[in-house]
Length: 253
Image (cartoon, rainbow, N blue to C red; front, side, top):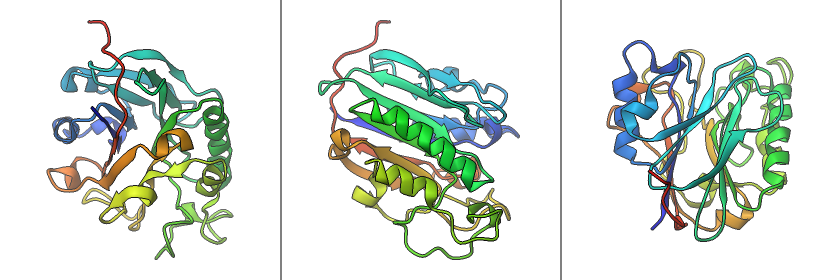
């Protein structure tokens, strides 16, 4: 039995009457673990999806969290150490191949130097674990995504006036983390904008699933989820991947 992993920025707590639409997107994807970002106002995702939610508080931004299916046995959970604008949550689940740590993160939206600092924190956390998956809105362009089109100020290197800023994703790649979509992805990779996206975005891939070498080879599929209400549920499309890793057991009721 494999694991299905989802990353989804739900936009300011799915406010404005979007909670039903967001939960329908999550339910349709049927993930075992979903990394969710922008949990402003404590939206009742656990109650609505039937999953368990573990949240990391932000320093100055919005909480992030992980929804975990009842069939999975959670060994530990917590927040990644360090000063994250939006926080970074992690859970460790039991699998037949050993513990698997899954992280939900949301990097700083505006300045690349702060994204780079947060990426270093994530890389340091991942280095201490053999089997780890990082998921979330990295607010970053990847050097492996090819030449970008129009690039907004926030994605340039020096206060919006330098070249294209790929430093955060490049650092994570140098530290050995594998971009799952680049490895096994299918279809278009861009995750913003949706119909709710405004001038803040140009078409780009900002949401990623990254895996350590010990688990990266277990991924068999990865795609950006479109259709089924995703265009109006949030300003980001979710990313869905399948990992051929067998859960070792179930959580206690």
